[in-house]
Length: 335
Picture 1 (tube, helix red, strand yellow):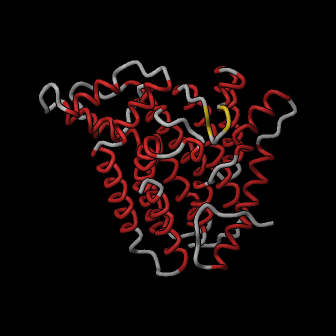
Picture 2 (cartoon, rainbow, N blue to C red; picture 1 turned 135 degrees about the vertical axis):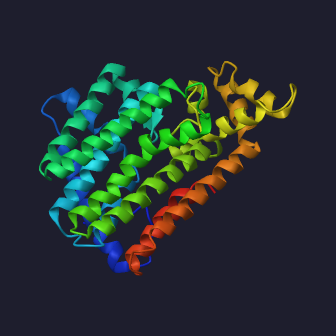
Picture 3 (spheres, rainbow, N blue to C red; picture 1 turned 90 degrees about the horizontal axis):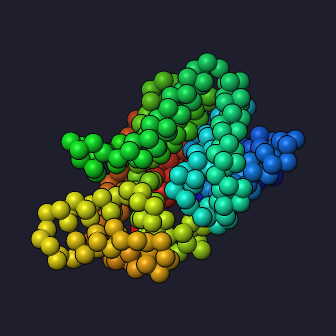
């Protein structure tokens, strides 16, 4: 069985190997969300069945190609990072009141907030069970990653301190909430494929940087894309008051411009009641047309290029080329 990859690859042999291993990860994911209890079973399978690009496990499988990618531990590690990611989505959707996820109603819309939160906890538990079989070092890395995920969400919820720059605060939130797991995905692949420590460090740093670029690209997509394509409601973050880079850049500019400026007019729109879909659409359109969206896109591209630079020590070949393509694909979504 082979599975279509979210990442286009020019090396047919590499694409064939990764497709086969992604299929093994899918099997493991479905086994991991199988429960005898009907509610736990249905709620846990909800997002797995909804699909997704599986970018994190794909990155694990890809960095494993720098060593022995055929080891069973690599498949287990790839499943761990995806289960962890899925668990965070259950929690994030409750906190953000997101009605859709991957084109389907969010779990909290179907079963309520409490069931959605507990289902996320169940997935964390299953991820922990699998990672325990990978050894103490893997457990430690997973725990540290989980801690950063929680800190990122906490700091996003609380917001910057009065003496903090909101943009720098946000970038740290992205590093913890998004990039930490992408970095661990890359790290696990190289680590369990038996790569040298310097190779593991290289791909981990690549993951840290490209993870922030990925989320900045998502900030652009939230404003510029068709919700029927992304499976998300455009402007959900605006409605819930969740900070994004375009909004933060706009607020920074508006604070330095006189009353009555276009910047301040758009900020006033963002601060208005966006409960009604029509009002939200007006606010999204106003922000979408502003220069700050272009600036956010540009920063995502710059970070992706920086991430590619980190790959310099790796040997030339199809795996390195695929990692470059991985970075490009993450930000091309916003271009």
